[in-house]
Structure formats: structure tokens, C-alpha cells
Amino acid sequence: MASRKLDGYKGRLNCSQLAAGMTAARANAARLAKDARLLLGAEGFASAASLAALSLEEARKISILRGMALELEDSAIKAEWKHYRSHTSKNSHWTFPALVADGAR
Image 1 (cartoon, rainbow, N blue to C red):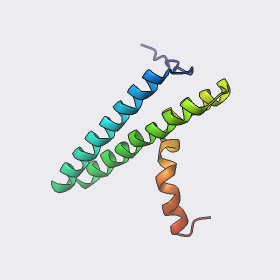
Image 2: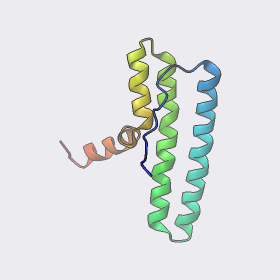
Image 3: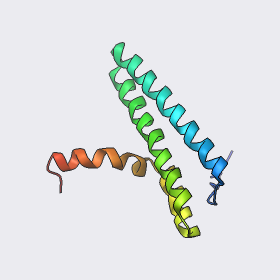
């Protein structure tokens, strides 16, 4: 059976949708962080690290959704959706300071 890539939504969200998305992302981030702490306490270090990274990604979605609320151009909204779906984009805000601190150029 051939797999088919689904087209992601790229349009605008209204205020209620943005608020619901932010609320869901915050709840997911908190749940993932709690689970990461439980795994860390049980010495499940690799799994704890994975869930912690996912928690940070969920938290990053909040600022991306906030950015969508401020954008005026459809092309900018489309770019924000690309950031929303990108693991790299959602991780760069917390990895960049560490790279700079370690002397990365």
C-alpha cells in the first residue's frame, strides 16, 4: 500500500483557535515534562531526555502560535506553519545559546 503525504493546513486561525492551540500545547508540554521527570527518577535517562526535548518543542509551539496572531501577510503565516511543523525550528531557541556558550561559530 503506497503512503501518501497529507497536506498540512497553512491558513489563518481565529483568536479562539489560537488560544485553544496555545492551551493544548501548554498542557502537552507540562505532561511531557512530568513524564520526563518520572523517567529520570527511575533512571530511564535516554527516554527522559527524549520526552524533555518533546516537552520543549511543545512549549515552543506557543510562541509560534503567538507569532501567527501578529502576522499580516499570508506568506508569513505559511512560514509560521512551516516552523510549527519543524523539529529543528522548535529546538533552535534552546540549543543556540548552548552552542554559543561552548564557542560554536
